[in-house]
Length: 383
Image (cartoon, rainbow, N blue to C red; front, top):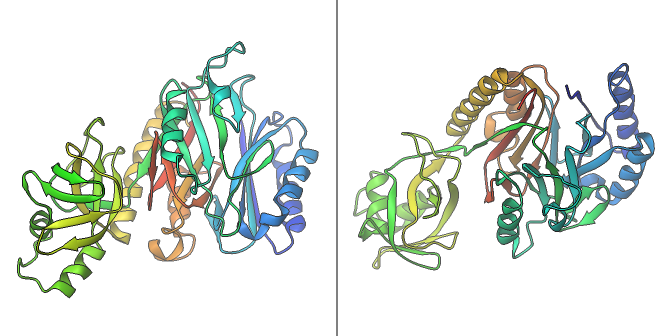
């Protein structure tokens, strides 16, 4: 059975932080199997030292493959390091030949080595214009089609680790059938109206829903006065989002909550006379849409929902060995009421298991790129 451990530390001097982590790792690895895969997440205060940190990790633990990225915040267990120098590590001993680190999606194609990629953890640079297509292609190279991970949120350089330090790109680690995982997306918002069908759209202009003007639909779903003054309307729409489901996706939406295939996007503008809404996404006729609002109460409610689902399924599958949680950098800290609150909720619900993660510039689940969400993935004890 795979054994996971984690360590974390914050310090203005990266060498002192790494020394603290290494001391904790040595204690936790006593009488434990030798690890072969490691996760390393750094805040962007350590960006310039990223190469030195990876070299030191490789020197301390030869034979361990390392993956990770740099962001504005990282976290481990119930501690969040946001906008401060810090690092978090997680180590695991996985079955031989059960994973493959990649920095180019092509090695995941079926080859002579016989490796069968079931799922993949992905770290990427959100500035790549063809990123959605790259994620779809990578998803197609896995048996399940399931990707999980996030984008670097570093304010200086979007670095990623995949046995080396890379500027930008798409990289990560693929897992075979011997590394079972459970994963869920928490949207942090709830639909406030019915699920509608886009009947006419042009680029990012939403013209009609179910044959009616888009503006009339959102006014009705928000229960607003049709004669609401323009300034008040703009203010209401500034806090309203569109939950989108592609026409080729399975529509699985429960009352009061979104399914995992929903991408939530902002409303950018409105044409009062034309009744057109401007959506921060390219949309087309046939897609499904439900208007929604994001707030702390909805975020907490939805997070607790997926935590209960994952914990219940994991317990039935041999328990949780380790966990990874990627949250949007816009959700950290105060959005959940106080510093550390989000990861404390996750840690408490999952129990005493190694947990690490980072605050991302965008979250990845399946082949979708999300925003303002959280992606929880746990490694279970049995397939």
